[in-house]
Image (cartoon, rainbow, N blue to C red; front, side, top):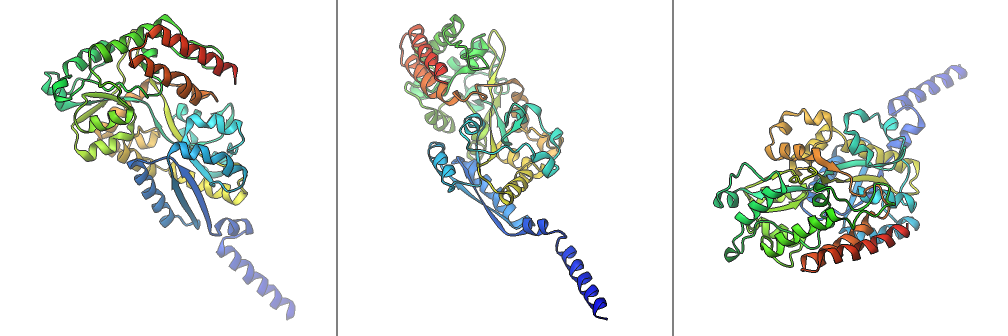
Length: 418
């Protein structure tokens, strides 16, 4: 009788365990866990990101809470190395994919190559070129959060007032020049195109005419070429002699002036779509115009990355949130509300996505993406130490050939210091 009682008790305990989740590991995974994530989304897109995370916290059944800390990118980059090394950093980070190589080299992030197998998310449902940005060789270090290029924004009202077809934006650099001149009226503080001196590269213009800055493997300096000098001379003439852009313009100024209807065109990423739409600006968005060698636009995007030292429970919880982000509902919401191009085959088939004119144009314009030093650990240094100082001199009226030569010398030092 005693044996039977013990057997019944053991059976009841086993049944209770199965109802509660089965194995011990499952129970441990279901224990409440709070994750922290750092992100530099300081614009309106950050508000949408918070809403999506709040919804995840309210609806997930895994007892996971994600706390997001939004800060400007410079602050995040300065704080992260020390925070990770002292064990006081976030569970994971959301940053530009241009930092992935640097983070991996400096031991700030974990190998997450088991993500697809562990979560069961269908890897084949996403653009290969987007996924590739989160890999170094065969090792996966990130899960894409968004993909983007640079696009040409144009004000349809200004185009129409200048006698241009508001539904026919420029498709070549010569058309861009002609439209910019036609839309410029300095007496109204109205300019044809914003050409800010602090923009990172202007590589899309160099590529368009057969130029480049650095080889894809980061070993060869390609900056000091006649193609680049000719293109930058054209750009300097457009800005200074034709007067189509305000002098001393910053990228932030260009945002403000386009919002206020004082710029007919400017180049930016999709993060401004949401704000422009809310402001009621009558604008269009199209691909970067082509030059003699074609049309190209620098690729970019952001990825979620698991910080170094994560334990098994943290890794499992972060994977679940990453999988949530890759769901059709989340990716659709992000693209619809922020205008970022769709890179999921299943989401592309959604009728709401197909009916969104701006989003359709953005996705079409994304066909000309080209890698701008994303695989190089010196990528951000090329922007800050080489390209931005060079463009500031050129747009201030300095000799183009001399400015390119000086920047090329700096690039040689950057390459040698890898």
